[in-house]
Image (cartoon, rainbow, N blue to C red; front, side, top):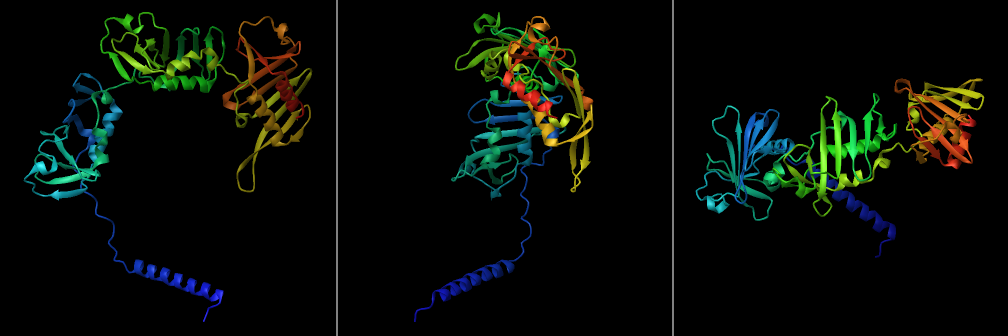
Length: 452
């Protein structure tokens, strides 16, 4: 007899339900084994107490690293400063290294595991210890997931994960200090750059704002300058052209094509000199006065080649609408004053409210006010006039529009606009340059504030 379609569906649901119920029953009746046993550490090691670390591969040079104050120094195969974060990373790996599986408690034939001729030996000597903690590494497991290893004083052979030893597979160059300048961007107070594109200088103000001091006193883009400082902070050599160069002419460093000088908070200064191309978008460089000539990647040179224009403050004003607590707008003989207050909505969140307080009092739509403020922060400069004529040449002897933004502890920001022969110009306090704006966008700006 053929079952109706709905009966087929019903039976399928019953069967599926039975399978789920059975699965749950099996899970509920499994014995509770508790948490898995913690794996045994290879060493009882405190990385903070390690004073010497030796990496000795079967192929390649042995590397010896010695703690020196808060950092590390490489003493073999050559005496150079070491990359402290890289050494710390290796010590962390060694400190946390765990035994994956014990193969034999008393191995008599080490050649079965490649331990008669180790592929790698790692030794860490802690302060106060007569002997270093040493790990001997042998052959890889057939599936490549681990390697055989042992400690010299024990016959026990065990395995450790292959990935856990990757931090020890280093060449000497990988562990030397490759930082050329050793500067932190937050410590830089002034910057001077020379190159084929011209020379310029910048200084950081009290409110972390950057401005050019040469060849013209004008504002710089905070984030653009920060990007350049970040490139200097992270500059690392890719290789060594000469450990102690006797002939700088070979590297184009007698008269460097580019120089970057940073003045730090403590008053000291460091200069990076960049010479000839080292091929494949790389350059010879050194810290002035250092015998070491390094090869550095071309990214920094690409940034410097953009010149002063790349670092200028290209927006009329760099402000965030949420920082503005009030503002004044002057248009001809009319002046309007605006103030912000905050209230809490039904969810207890603060909500901004705007009001015109002069010449009359009027509540305003918050979005309308913030749209106007966004426009003044969004309009970009079309052209800079760094050697401006008298103010009348730009209509700035009698500005047709002025806005003063009040930002509490961040102070005030002011801009004035003038018209001349169909063009719109702007100026900012303390800025020698006159800024030429897109006339249509300037009209949108003044209209947005005029309607408040």
